[in-house]
Length: 248
Picture 1 (cartoon, rainbow, N blue to C red):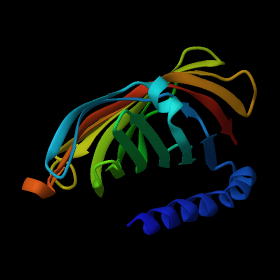
Picture 2: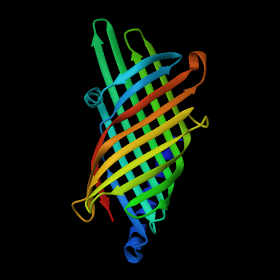
Picture 3: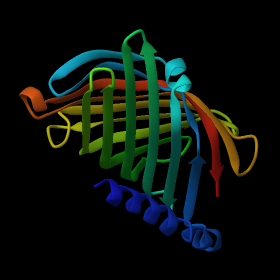
């Protein structure tokens, strides 16, 4: 599944970029690319591996201090201002080693979240409204190594949720736009329930570049297995977001 995910992302990006040449000729395509935007996340909720569940509260400062790898990408392609494709990918790799007295602890956490959806323009003009339908792929890798005791707990899970939602924008002036996005999904197909909310202020001082800033949250309630094999992830990933959008 993880290899398939990487191939899928690469194929979509490679396939969409050649279409820019077509878009420049007939003006049918519009592209919005946000590479490496900053999402300063915190994580709140409950996580559990091997049947052991604990409350999890990780602030952005803790994530920053233990960050080992991160990658973000958002790409929106719209055809004739009617049909569209939305791709948003987030990768996070955290690691922490702690030694206090006799306790030697090594903790690792990796996550991938991919949102892939089609969009359809319902309302156009100064106010725009798009219907959204697609999938959210989530991959989690948790690893807790108590080296002093020779004990190790790990849990790797990935799943796919169907999602439906809406995307709204209001062009306040020629340079300022309010953008809102929301979706729900899961419904027992992957997770029991998942949701996402995003609010952005968009400032476009240049023809092809805009500055966007706002707040984003993704909540997920997922369980698998039972007893000693039970895996639990009931958490909200949330935080402020800022980045540059390249438009062409």
